[in-house]
Length: 156
Image (cartoon, rainbow, N blue to C red):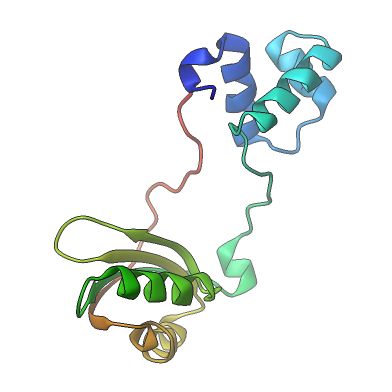
């Protein structure tokens, strides 16, 4: 399995460019990285096959799609067991309002990232969805007042 250490400067440059402009044409990408379009296309295919590029997508403007409020929710379960973790995971995976969910080490079990329309919508999401998840004992909510940095770009 290839790792970042196996990539040369050109592969890394392709990854950097694609992270900021996933819609770039192969011709424009080849000009930016200094290769022929054919060689660039072959490298892209190899990077996709190697798992370095997982997907291409569009980033939507949250306020335009009625998801202007960003919230993070700490979740503490009433008990931790493999069965509880599995049940919680299945419930989260079925919930489209949850953008990210991470099992964490520390003072709580999971950290959820969600976007909703406003505080009224969040209250409904908390009451109808989050508190109905299996094993939820306690939650702490952090509503984002200002997004300082929001990026998906990884340093390569």
